[in-house]
Length: 304
Image (tube, rainbow, N blue to C red; front, side, top):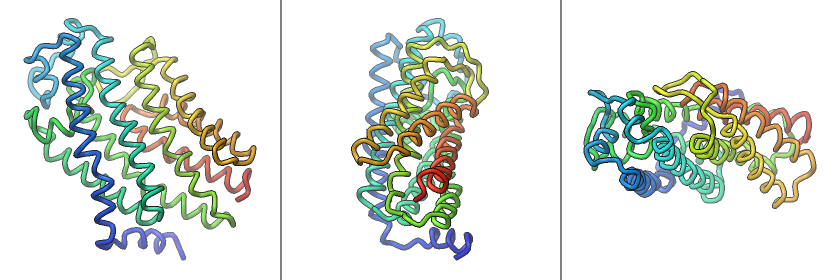
């Protein structure tokens, strides 16, 4: 089977994926509103007034003065609100995806289809609510926890682009196609999904939470946002937050020594990409980079 036929099989949708799409999308109904409320409550605890919270949760198209918020409430307080709300959602939603796709569906093609439909759903909901200022409506659910204050006018744009990046699934299908053509033992392929996505789910999230709250934001980077800076502590946190969960996967499954080297390689790849990729694009580049590393190891090192 050539690649185009292989890819076409992934677009052969039928109604049996509908329950999986609904199950995978439960985080929109549960986690998004919860983390939006969490951010609203956290801002109250940090002393942000009701009027200013309404501006923060708005589309920010009119008269959003980031300097005003930084001077009034402090850069660190805003970093805490941004980092905790967005990345806790990132962690919980990512783990839900990983568990549901691998342990509930257990079929690569159906898992891909469900994830693809879920990505299209989020993009559609974000598009519909992009210009809305209703705090307690669809815009509040989709952008409340995810639109960083310190991204200023680009808050919603940053999250929207990050969701578009998840359409990298078609690139991952191509890498999977190459892998199946070049390996003889597919039994351990299930572990590669953890190596591809766990660093993005946990490592990338811890990098922002730890780096923005305790790190010294001195590394200037390019990306979507009014304040684009990272820290050495954040980069180290991405590396360790990627490495330790992967080492746990290897240890719990008694995988051979070569997998330990793969852990180090994937963690290094993730932390490097997270640092140099334009902000809001790492959702695309990290999984693709990690998938390529896994493919190289599968063919040349692990010899599956």
